[in-house]
Image (cartoon, rainbow, N blue to C red):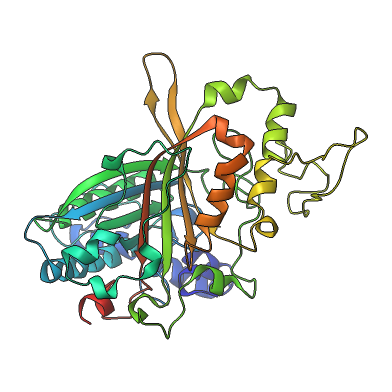
Length: 410
């Protein structure tokens, strides 16, 4: 099991009642510390609020972490004159801050008080480097080939002001105030070293809202993420995490994140009858099962035909085209957030998916699948890719390290 997956919630479920009380108290450490300083009684936290994830470990948190209710994506550019020294100081500062916030403790300097009584709430703060970061810091020889620019796709309508960036931060939490508090603290801690390039907000279903964990639905109402690789699978690490023993060993245990803001043309989509929507996806809307039958996890019967002799799952269905067996086994761990940024004067919602996918090599993960989708996916008529980014995300820091230290001090 990956270090970050051993959450306070999971531990509470395995140690028994006697140990659980102590673990719950530890997870609420921030609230206890605040109470000791102010003389107030500590805030009682529910299971959702008390869940704490580790900042240090083999991999950064926020990759295999279960989907969180609230997310913020933010990209920074280093300021003019800021280089490797300033970047190292910034990552040291950010790492110390993230460690405190993920433990449910206030920011060391100038805490806003927004999350004092909220607990850690599964907060994760994940850091990555864009292609231009290596130019700005004089580390071009350490830039891995996985950061080569993504190819252009015919359906792209990308806004360069909301794409790419020197540095990228992903924030997730199960409490909106906790997530916002972390976003604000990270922005303030950038100081004079970096400026915000773009920032996006997202959400998912709240943990605990259903009696058992369920695959999330996107804003089209479709079950989204059924074929995701899972950590217990024997080849999971090979597909998702960068191995050690390469020229770019600073990235060992890390991954590549492809980030896409995908606008959903919901007015057009919602005009389709249910049968047409299901034909576009290749799955039933009710439960995510293939049109060929079974349950959500049933394998697609891609060769099955109906009484009319036509394929039951159409040849341009999204599920068919994106299936790993249709793409030489290409796989990526999709971990998105939905977004809604208001309604235009014409009544059109600015809504869709903040698509984030993780893989050991984007040239073997995202790129071949997206190329194939770009050539004939029936879903393409109902979505628009409006922003894009590619980031190398280092492995998790060891105790006493900051994120990226093995690169910046190499």
